[in-house]
Length: 352
Image 1 (cartoon, one colour):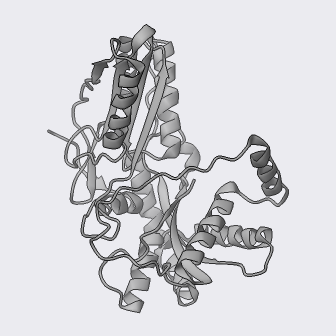
Image 2 (image 1 turned 135 degrees about the vertical axis):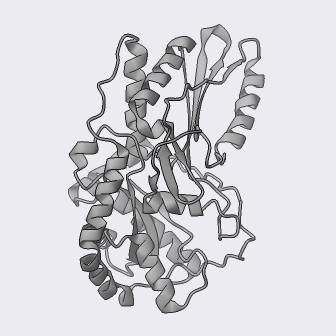
Image 3 (image 1 turned 45 degrees about the vertical axis):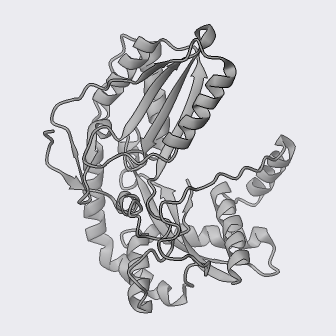
């Protein structure tokens, strides 16, 4: 498998790679994206659209290596979409089939050093219906990249004659620019965080037996609210100029404070931010996520809106100093506190 010159993973992608380590607390897992879409779809047109997007987006023909590097394949590979015929199955059999599929693929760990680290599968259903299942390792994409992927697939599917215009810039250039910015601002941002660290609490003291939780499955808990309740919440957040992701972080912090018996703690959170030169890479697929360590307080008797406003202001300040990123901050805290060489903040919040 010949490839071009390799380049380094970003800090977050490297953290995803390290999270596959079964010896880490809550390790032995990959960070992935799983999605099912049902409708009426022409299999051949979809396969052609997928191939066009692979040709257009270098990250979809990129290989991740165990040493923390990545490289684009020299030759554009042909993706052979798995096709499964369920057209003669009953609805009960189909539901049982996909229930088992979700159990397998929603926690799938794609092997590193191989291509592809994603899967797009086609399932033919009765009455000319079909279901397409997407499974991606998040070292290749972020949330906005998934939107780009879906849009390009849709455009190429609806117009089989369409050939996307070549990208003016690619993900490798972004990583190189990010490294340059990190080198230029490192000392300044390190100094900022060294002033913050002494006041930052540690991770929530929730007991985790080393190794016991490795490779464990993460359960999905769902709480549904009415449209009326959600609209009222959105109105309150808008009136107070509070971002939904900040409110979610506040709620997450309150929950962790409750279960850890503390009033203050720090958690890592992911932030989708394509700087530097965000406008240049707006059409590029890749993992542009950054990691931020944020200190939280329960807020005591303060109104939650006031706590959220303070938290939002703090995050905006922290985002100006990401050359010394969340991983660097966690390493420095571990060094100062003489913590063991293990995951020190194992309960991150994936935010957007």
